[in-house]
Image 1 (cartoon, protein in one colour):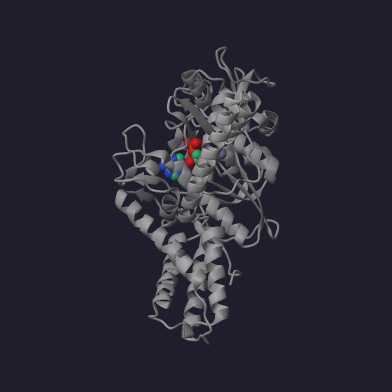
Image 2 (cartoon, protein in one colour):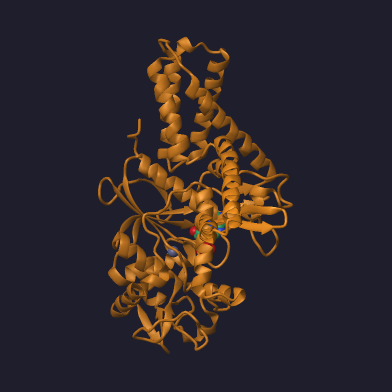
Length: 495
Ligand code: AMP
Ligand code: ZN
């Protein structure tokens, strides 16, 4: 059942292609990670949950995967030329690396809440300056970059003329790019052509994050980090490169230029792009207030929702759209997703309690066909909404079996066992959905345990056993549990 052929939509060729890894049985996958200068928003989460699904499905198909997802902590500039991390540091009066750590921790916590798997490697751009400088040297040696006042620029015009690949991914024509170039406006005059982009930038005296290089004390351009780190960990050409489709230009287009410009090879065989999250039909955007953060969505503390929605209901909502389609977040859609998630989890419980001694004929065949179709949907470019519709057809039949509308004699024990495995594989392994009804029980246990710990710490304090009371507080802090001593006793909260 698992051996049908996987097809993926390749954004570079704009066609669905049979997926053939470079080395049979192994997959190298690189996904552009977050720029860690503020809290991750729900659109970012959609992209990372989508690539988690892709990772999980490839694992399910038996591939050994090296999944690299970077942390951007330098070089991603705002339109006015300020580095996003430096700006965060200035506004929050923190060290740049404190900003990076703070929002990396927040990102990890959110990825855990959505029950995503950790990547195999999570490299940071600032830890790979040497590799980036080496790549700039190679591009210079090959004649596709030039030095101007200590900065190094990629020569898009020369590259486009000689290699004929610039603009292929994003569908842009070099002449149209003249007014669109996005990096550091201050240095536009140094470029030979407006669509040229910086691969190394000379830093001004007040710039905080800078490193020595053969050209100047400066910092790498944003696009360069992904080219350098994907090459280092996955090789010059690997299997899958992913990111949100807003990264196609300039980020991914320029990555291709850098890889081809340095080693004359394409970075990957398949480009996969997720589509954008909308809210009430419009792009989610902070500037016009059309935004909701994951904590607001979970707590219901937002004018955009009538109540809070649990992380798994939100994740289920994401799975109901294909990763390559836009997804519109509305209160109604979330209410429907919450119902769908509960219905799925209840049917899964009902199924696990079913037993059968039947012979099985037509029902066995129907189940076989639905299960095969669900795997076929996943093999068809990870089509989760279609797979879910097959799974819900099975849920309806499972409920009918429970209520006696269909006799259990219709189902053989072997097929029932297969359907149970199928549910576990889809819910736990592929979709990564957790059963929140059981984590509710855990919260009662948690609350009881915390009462006990607070009592033990109170006793230690009464006995002036400061070593024990401090140990308890510090160990809880490591688990991100904060104790607050007040007039009415001690309370706890998750940090
Ligand atoms: P950033 O931190 O801005 O570099 O973005 C991290 C990832 O989130 C990138 O792959 C973006 O393409 C993706 N992303 C940003 N906004 C959205 C959105 N509204 N919907 C889906 N993905 C998004
Ligand atoms: Zn990237």
